Amino acid sequence: MRIDLVSFEKWYANQVKYKKVDGEEPGKELREKSYSFKEAANILGIHDCDLYDIWKNEKLEYITVDFVRRIPVDIFEKWYADQDIYSKATYIPTAEELEKDYICLQDAADLLGISREKLAKIARSEEIGRLLDSTICNNKRWITRKSFQLFLNAQNVYYILDDGDEQEKDTVSLEIKEYISRQEAAELAGVSVSTVTKWMQSGEFQCVGAGKVLRVHRQQFLNWLNEHREGVI
Image 1 (cartoon, rainbow, N blue to C red):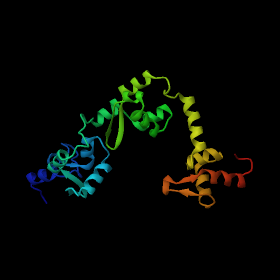
Image 2: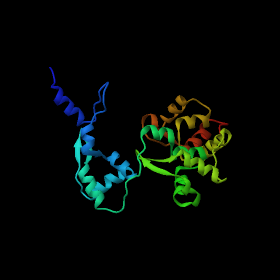
Image 3: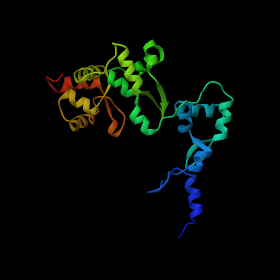
Image 4: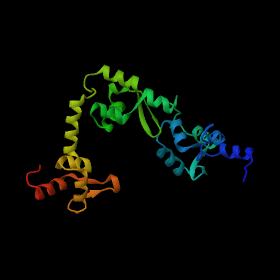
């Protein structure tokens, strides 16, 4: 069987599911006529789930290509012109720029030894947080590395943890978690992960999740250990 080259290229330019081994990216024409919800959300600097809600609540038009919903460009532009809540991002960083020039909010919070929510609150409501230049892209909030460094230099409350601080932070976190991973349970008990897995099958303590992401109720696990393993914790 042979395929007409012109029709093949037309098909290739209007889909994004399949990519040539060598050659240009697929969907050139499709992207000129429509946005994925993530692409449109990046234009606005918001999460795509928020944009889904807008489209659903306002019953706005969309198309479906390869089982994925997309927004026609003209529909998006008309909606944008008719509202005054959202503004287009001044710049959308590329994947390479995100890797090189930005740090995601979660990673920045981890470096400081605080929660993501705490850092988000600092950026949103504290005077010093205005130094943090952030944007939402690909459903994550990112901070420019340059502004993060300016933030670190401008105050003496928040700082990057050294290894010793991180170890202490991990210990404290483990003590306050309601559910812990099998690895964390194994560390508490001083046994292997496979041993913890066997114990979990007994049903003596509560577990949540499925497969590789099963987690153990910390307090029930400690109670079970106290009852069954003398001298442990």
